[in-house]
Amino acid sequence: MKSDLTLINIREEILSENKELADQLRVRLRERQVYLVNLMSAPGSGKTSLILRTVAALREAFRIAVIEGDVDSAVDAERVAAEEIPAVQIKTGGSCHLTAAMVEKGLAALPLDSLDLLFLENIGNLICPVGSDTGANLNVALVSIPEGDDKPLKYPKIFKTSDAFVVNKTDVQAYFDFDLEAFRSRVRRLNRDAPIFEVSCKTGEGLDVWSAWLAERVRTEFRVAATQPDGLAGR
Amino acid sequence: MHELPVTRSILGIVLKHAESNGVERVHTIDLSIGALSDLESEWLQDYFDHLSRGTVAEGAKLRVQRSSLKFRCEACAQEFTAAREELAGALCPGCGSRDAAVVGGTGYRVESMEAE
Image 1 (cartoon, chains in turn green, purple):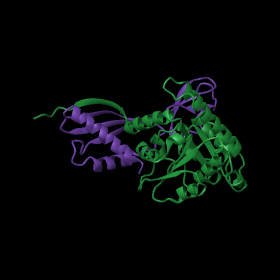
Image 2 (spheres, chains in turn yellow, orange):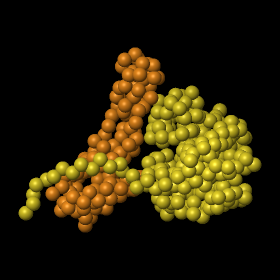
Image 3 (cartoon, chains in turn green, blue):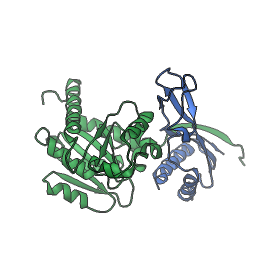
Image 4 (tube, chains in turn orange, cyan):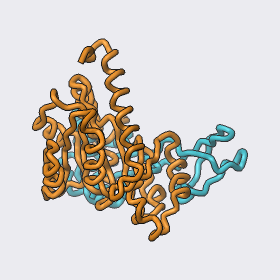
């Protein structure tokens, strides 16, 4: 009878399977020259509104589609489809974030060869989506003025790992105690480099700066991809 | 509930290594979790107890090693650690600057397990 305990070294990242699939998706998307933006926020911050505004600003420049993640409704996908933007709905059936496997299913339902830019609206939640790589080129976290300027202190991981931040609903700033300077300095404690955009999806303020920045990111990515030996040059 | 997919991943890693090492029972599992993680040890264990039923990892105890919050001072480049509560306030012990940013702290992995 064995009774000796053995120590087995493992040293393996948790959720590494999801990460591997996400890396594969990034390669596939780059081959098709599709730029994927993962948009994360709490419920009600304005993810769908930001997507609609951004698409309106960029639809002349890029062919755009949206993957809508939702726990169990099609409300957002219907809003997007009403603007005649190609939209795919992923219902997670109770799960609180999108996994790379779910995104893969969404991609399969889209004509990738005739797209340049793809928005992924994640489940409204500042915790769960963070650890689950979606295969996106750009991770954007959205915060709105009524939520308060303390979010970087309460949910530091999303602020540490995102590539850009958008503060929405600046039109109602006078009614709330959101201190933009305090917010910026709290974000900077976690993330030195990611730009912070202030917008109002209601009035349109600030959306030109955000949209222009995003367009430049997409173009830069395509230029870089076109110079890679395995990229699709001469698009 | 975000602990659930994480726990499922932990169990998958543990069972894979249990099989390749031919172990009959897993006793303890050591995890290291970054300072910025929101994972609660108690929930991890509860989910693990539930998910591992009927496997060689049933009854195994999770031991969580949490790293402390690590900063790098932008003014003098010194690295220092602080408690999670000090996220907004920690000053550089070298030069007193508040201009410091968190380094790392987002990873989590299964380090090892004790088994027979």
